[in-house]
Image 1 (cartoon, rainbow over the protein chains, first blue to last red):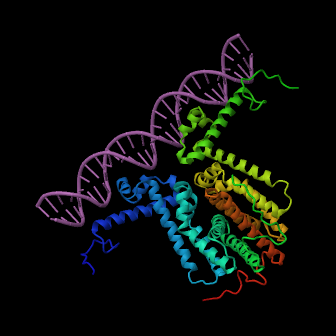
Image 2 (cartoon, helix red, strand yellow; image 1 turned 180 degrees about the horizontal axis):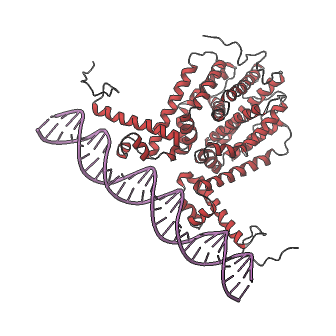
Image 3 (cartoon, rainbow over the protein chains, first blue to last red; image 1 turned 135 degrees about the horizontal axis):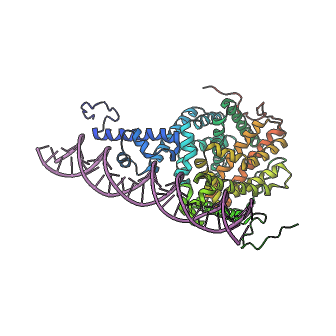
Length: 238
Length: 238
DNA sequence: TACGAGGCATACCGACGGTATGCCAACAAT
DNA sequence: ATTGTTGGCATACCGTCGGTATGCCTCGTA
């Protein structure tokens, strides 16, 4: 049952919302957009609330009405940027059924996303310091990392490796960390294309090695390298 | 011919330095130590200069005499912490001749270093945001990353892979990023020992896979996997 | 039409990084 | 020994920024 909405003065955000709500949502969106821009350009510390509210053509009263503070504003921006990137990556790998192929597609998509300036500055550079580790991890887990973990899971399964969730997460961490770090260097390289190609080749080699080992019947959980050193499980934690 | 030094009031830092220099060095060391402690405990933003100089029993005049500002102070602390960790890692792998064994030893040493609270907070969490990417990378290159790159180089050579420097650096980036990320999770895990063991097993598997591929004659630069599925050939289109 | 409240502006405060200035002990020159 | 000079540091102050308190004004509702 569509409620009859009289002509709103050109604010076509959400048709089912009242004028007040639309105004409010509009200023909030403006704040988020300006904040994203300024955080990406000058970093968290370099972007003052005064310049942000000035850019959004409001005052600090509006800002503190929508967000509890600068950190909360950054948090919202962080979530926006990250979820947008994750969306793109998921879009790219969707429909690819072969696990190894999917891994390579995902690798390319991830590296492309990592090169986005806003992503690099907000998510990678300032994110951990501003949000703190626990919050950062928590947000990571429900976005980009999950994608990597899913791909890693299917790849391991395709290789015939049956591993528990902890092991799968460990592998996902390894590859996720590798991709984040490597994406940085690619983004900063003089020849990004060449750098990206090197990364692809190296990752393909590592993946192929895992598959070759698996094809030889080597199983995780009772690992030894052929001719190499076996990973002896003795390490002191503290 | 030892110059006769009259009894200095218990400041045995550098015997060849004048009294003034020793006092100066002492306050600088005190500032660095207190700053390291407070940066590690409360983070860069959470540690004010007032509390730092109070802890070192000096004033801001002294601080700004030795450092150009808060960021420079953090930079010095950063270098200290990182070089100390690198020193320990080099100590551990020194004398191990087998490349694969050295890689595993280095892996353990690196993960132990990464679990140090000061290292985690100062180098990993706050470092990139405070110093900026270029400075962070620059400092990384001449410390921990170099160690990883050396080990990766010997491992690749032992596997019979002849790669150029760019490719070696790419592999080093992959492993360095993986280790940094994974070290974090180990440090935050409930059972660090189990987490560390999982990491070791996973890394050993990856390394063994690389060696197995190499033993099959697969060479970087002309990648395909013989026998098993190659990561790249025969892409099924949709 | 009146009332209530969400939405936001204005003014202000405390904390913090940074700077200017000056004192004072330590070394050198005489 | 005296004096001049300079490095080493303390004191006082300023601008900026994040955060808060308060109040107005308009939109929604009765």
